[in-house]
Amino acid sequence: MTTAPSRPTTRHSTAAAPADPHRWPDVAAVPGTSWPVRATTAAVLRNALRRLPLRVRFADGTTLGLGGPLIEVHDPKAFHARIGAGGLIGFGESYMAGEWDAPDLVGALTVLAAHAADLVPAPLQRLRRLWAVRQPAAQRNTPDGARDNISRHYDLSNDLFTLFLDDTLTYSAAVFRGFPAQWPLLAAAQRRKIDRLLDLAGVQEGTRLLEIGTGWGELALRAALRGAHVTSLTLSQEQRALALRRVREAGVADRVRIELCDYREARGSYDAVISVEMIEAVGAEFWPVYFRTLDERLAPGGRVALQAITMPHARMLAARDTHTWIQKYVFPGGLIPSTEAVEQTVREHTGLTVTARDALGAHYAETLRLWRQRFTERRDEVAALGFDAVFRRLWTFYLAYSEAGFRSGYLDVQQYLLTKEGSER
Image 1: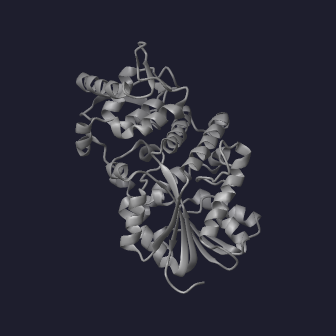
Image 2: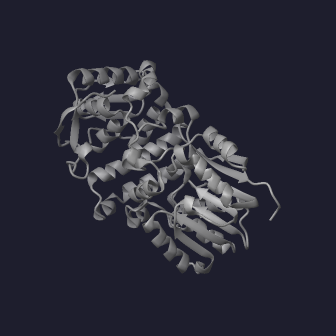
Image 3: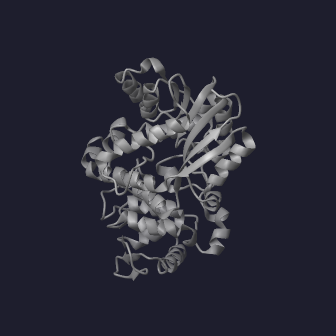
């Protein structure tokens, strides 16, 4: 629910360092809301929390829930004001401000993710278009908008990503042999995932491969070591610089081109196309263009290997026009598709066929757990790079929130094989 806010009041959380109002304006200031809005928000929340397998303890000692992971609300007034004004965005900002915490953050968020469809009463769900914050037009994934959106996340700092990723610098779901996994096994699990995709796409000696979304170069590098000729596209200058260095150091620079290029600007014909967790940055408006690009760049008889995070179709439809905390602070312009949306777009806008699909959600939960633990262990090194306490809480919340999504089944990740009729290679 929203209201016309009164003048926001700046506060300093007792649970975290004060937020810089220039860098974090919506964290440093609690939105002004009327008493009726705060009271209504509190009543709606308390009614929902009473039915969840959680323990939510407020500063006055009141505890709600059926038992389970603990959430401690240090500043109920600010907590309710933020949620009343901004919904789930306010919930995340309240964590960033240190107004609530959880000893087992993933456990608490997993419960909330599992009950996401039930948290808002049905009458309010039906009025979602009236109270939900809309996506800002500036975050549309036009060619210029996509460059800005990608830069805001992937150009933060190569050094930052190096601190919590494994030696492959792979920023997508790994594939493990068993659970639970340990940190030393993550690099092998990432290479296993990459080799699985290369096999799915039929990449071998002489294959002309187009990669849409370079990351930091591990897939292009491994494809080149198979003897493939790789063209890899990225919009991140930081990623491209480091990927080029890694390719040179591996001695395969003669077989890999890494271009600062939007997927819509790709040219040429390729035997195989691979795109790993790139579609989440495309936006629903441009899904038809993205899949047509895969089709147009793929030679007859070619194969596409696609790795994509997915969410339930009904939740995707509810969220597709809504501005979310993840979009505001982590992935501007992003939207996770459903399997139905992927397959419908392929069917209606391309000549490709969805030949195979494999779900690997449990592997992503484990990948995120290892990243989150590594990020936490190296928080002092993150601080030394110039990232303040609010940023560190933001990223802790982001990694835990994502892990909870996969553990609850709210999110999944798929590996698709798309094929194109024509002469065999």
